[in-house]
Picture 1: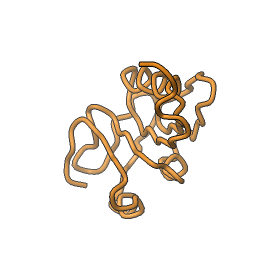
Picture 2: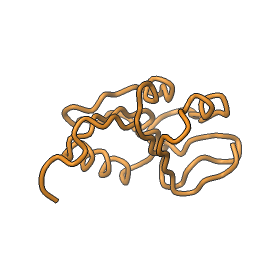
Picture 3: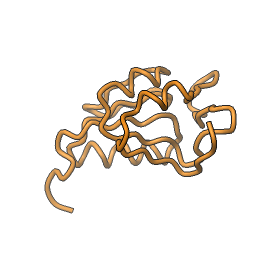
Picture 4: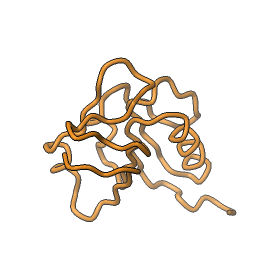
Length: 110
């Protein structure tokens, strides 16, 4: 792929493991503005680290990516890189604007 096909698109990446880190590298190489939460210390230029704050990462997002293993039935986001649990709650889901693209590998009811 040539060029910066995602130039300026704001993407939130919530949780994950090495697979999502690879994805974040690719997204930034394509010009996306990426915020991450729940991926530990990620040293990629231009990535905004939001610690464990899913809410902060979601602010102004134009697309949301959750991890391949997804979110469990209690809303817990797969995030083995951090201590403790991160939850994608129904309240957070309601703040995501209708039509905003959201991807995760294994959707469950939250």
